[in-house]
Amino acid sequence: MKTKAKQKVSIVTLGCSKNLVDSENIVTQLRASNIDADHNLGDAANDIVIVNTCGFIEAAKQESIDTILAYADQKEKGNLEKLYVTGCLSHRYREELETEIPEVDAFFGTMDLPALLNRFEADYKHELIGERITFTPPHYAYLKISEGCNRTCAFCAIPLMRGKHVSKPIEALVKETRGLAANGVKELILIAQELTYYGLDLYRERKLPDLIRALCRIEGIEWIRLHYAYPSKFPIEVLEVMAEEGKVCNYLDMPLQHASDSVLRAMRRQITNQEQLALIREAREIVPEIALRTTMLVGFPGETARDFAHLCEFVETVKFDRLGVFTYSHEDGTQAHKFSDDVPPQVKEERAETLMTIQRTISEEKNEDLIGSTLKVLIDRKEGGFYYGRSEYDSPEVDNEVIISAEHYLRVGDFVLAKITGATEYDLIAKPM
Image (cartoon, rainbow, N blue to C red; front, side):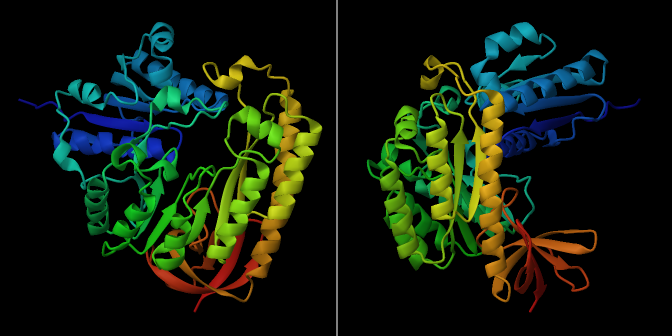
């Protein structure tokens, strides 16, 4: 008698690195219950597919809906047995989605992991801290140090989908990191909706510096990178730890969003432009080699041509090492939704392109200044006739890469010293020393 083939569960992840960590945890929990689960294998026949959605801005919501519909169509054709949806979009619009896409077997919110596991007759296993399966290359991993956000930025829907800020205990994060290091992780990327708020809920004081110091003591971890720091009331001790601890990359991702005081007030950012400038100056004084990455938001309600000109001048003056731009998305439920979305879409796009044109020039100049220097490079992958790696000044997926000819034998996941021989707007050309 033939036995039924073991079903595969495939998870499709959309959105940010925080969602990726959630997907990793889902697969880890399922495998611990002897369920064959993996990442992004949803095209196999008779799969159970879980779509982990993003609902941050309109474009992300549309991508999530399109993905759900594509798998719903596969289910209708008999290629899937079950289809589940989780994540931010599902959390925020569950009732509407249940009505509009009845082919989905169940929708789950961002905090419904036990309920999702129950569909597979699996229980949540708390003892799996430190045993997370990762979908990133083996040499780097994301470490989510908290969930949710207590900030009240007018444009942001994240608190509606992720709830209030909840920090993970230092000892739990240390245990998780030890597990990652044991599996070969060398670069640890700390993520949260708001890094600098870490610890206030658990310890009644900001504890990010203490957490970083504890993680620096873990053998095997060589780089620790900081993402998503809020500028208002920024704990300067974080910069001091960066200057003192050799494992902490001279890199800080700190989204500022704007430079016009009137727009910053309307955004409820709790900081003035002069305070932002003072923080940037202090960061560069304490850590002279720091690479600053930021994100700007253009087209916010009421943003005038003068406001935008001020933002352009700010970017040209500060010369960020890395910069990304979003166009404003009018999200229901946010504080800004009561404003008129009065900047036309075409103007939003033009402003985003103008700002990125300014940044491309800055990036090219900074890269050209590196020609002749030697950098420590972590090799991420081999592709065609080249290796692609990163320096401590660059995060995976979003920043510059260092390109090295494959005529030199290198091993993916290793650190090498490389001399920079050429530069483009967003990449460096190098040869190993």
